[in-house]
Image 1 (cartoon, helix red, strand yellow):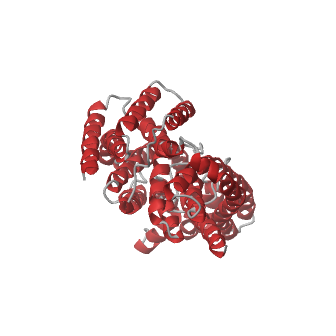
Image 2 (image 1 turned 180 degrees about the vertical axis):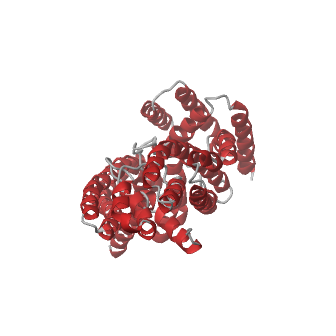
Image 3 (image 1 turned 90 degrees about the horizontal axis):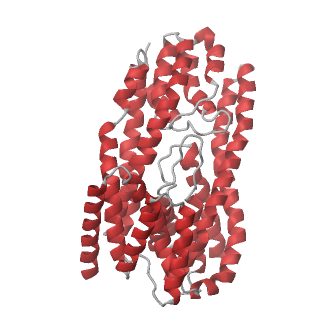
Length: 232
Length: 242
């Protein structure tokens, strides 16, 4: 029980830190699933599953781009949630099945991630208006302080939202895990959904202007490498 | 007076927080102000208050290209050309935002991800370090260079944009992405235990996307196919394993 509680606390704190990097500070991309999921996996003692979940979600969300003021699907919560759900429930059923179930169940959490992000951005409107008042009063230092507090608030908003999500989703996952694990399409969905919706979408998008030769050459080489790995 | 190396480092660090208080009406307005205000305090003298009011306004561009605009504005403020600085900020943010979104989010990031994915087929644990290394080795030095270039090109900031638009990286990423997609599709399909089914489904989805099908429609089709396959006893396993 203590380890479950610690797992939740650690993943909540990590969510806050990574969410700050995503928009508010740096954009060093440590919040991408390919980095975030293995990092949480390493912390929770399941690095291999963290890497697998990270790669799957990275493929699924590879096409979501922030253009202008458009806020795209956010893959941070799904990747961390999948690793957390797996880490907590890994002893209940065979590992591959629990991971596949966690990956599938965590996909819709991107909506909560986006919602928390929008709420944080709305809360910054007040910060801006206060900054205008401070500048009129000749207190530019207080306006700058407001900006720093907004960065910290990004972490708090996302930590709180993630914690609420865990409180709702974890018991549900535990209750339905038996049914999920025995469902016939589970492994196929977990393996193929991200692969197809993400990668096929990106490939179709980027071959619009006739870049077929590069795609075909890459495909042949990939198949050759795949066969070679299969034979090994 | 010019920007010392120490001041430039501090300025650069502040530009990393340009989106720290991003909001819908004014977007990066307060972030821009946060980054430039210590410099304004140094160069504006008596006009500090009006300079502050000038730069606490709507601003939105790509966060990696913001240092270019900040550099140009810093130089113009230093020369006492406040109105010109505000005009440069307004006129450059749109074009640089479009260039940055296309270059970094649309090309460099997917290319880095695909490269990391390719490495993950041999060393799965290396995916995260490779992605971080490739992406950040491109973007961090570029952001540093944009700040210096903006400061240097303040007399002709629009002309300087051509120098910061990294065409080589852009062209390389453009070629790498389709090839990378093909490579990962082939290698990952053979990483599963049913490569024929994996590749078949990939191409069906690919053709649906080419016909401008929506992601949700493809997703629903795929779920139906996966369940049918499951009932028929065909199960495709995860492509990555130890």
